[in-house]
Structures are given as structure tokens and as C-alpha cells.
Amino acid sequence: MSSILSIATSGMLAAETRLQVSASNVANANSDGPLPSASPATQSQYPPAYAPQQVNQVATAGGGTQAVVSTVQPSYQAVSDPTAPYANGSGQVAAPNVDLANEAVQQQLAQIEFAANAQVVRVYSQMMQTLLNIRT
Image 1 (cartoon, rainbow, N blue to C red):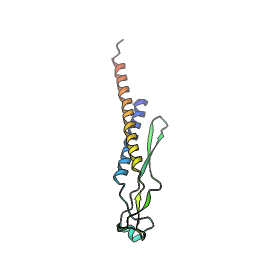
Image 2: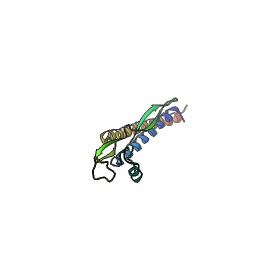
Image 3: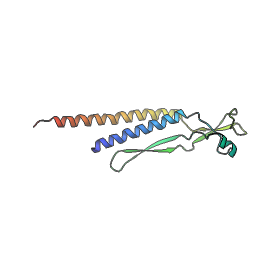
């Protein structure tokens, strides 16, 4: 595969990863759980709060990009929900640290990134077709 195609493909894969991570964050934004300081009995009885992830893109040695997924730090914030059965004495639970505005931006960025790299593939394909059709 040519370097142009491999670079564009790596960008499309990075965009796909960015969209998957963002969609997971949005889908689990309300998946709270006990605070890490909760008793071991409470922690064993209820699942922990969802730990949101983020994508950072890094350049690869041969050209292109790679999506590196890591956990958002801090991964939770203490919020008030005294009705939760796993709330601490103050009524606090651990809620995922998901910024929905940022997730909307990440999803738009993934769409633009994918479309731009798909256009590179289209233009490369047209260019190669034109070269193959040249008659001498």
C-alpha cells in the first residue's frame, strides 16, 4: 500500500476510535457508583462509577497517526445523590467526569477527520485511475 493510503487509513482509524470512545462516554455519563472511599462491603455490592476515556493522537514514525486511549483524570467527581443506596453519609456518590460539550466536539472532530481522510483516498484512487488510463 502506498504511504498516502496508509497515512489516510491511519487517520480514518483514529477518527473511528475517537468516535467510539466519545459514544461510550456519552452512553455512560450517568453510570455513577460508590465513592472510592466507600466501605469494602459497599464497593463489593455495587459496580464502580464509569471511568471515562479520552483519545490523544500521536504521529507514527512512517507517517500517519495513532489514537492513544487513556482514562480521564480525575475519572469521577463527587456529586450529591442521597437517594442512591451506595451514597456515603453525606449523600455523595462518584459520577463519571464526562463533559458532554467536549464529547459533542470530539464527535464532530471525528466526523471531519474521517471525511477528510476519505477524500484523500478518493483523490488518490482517481489519480491512480487517471495514470493507468494514460496512453502513450
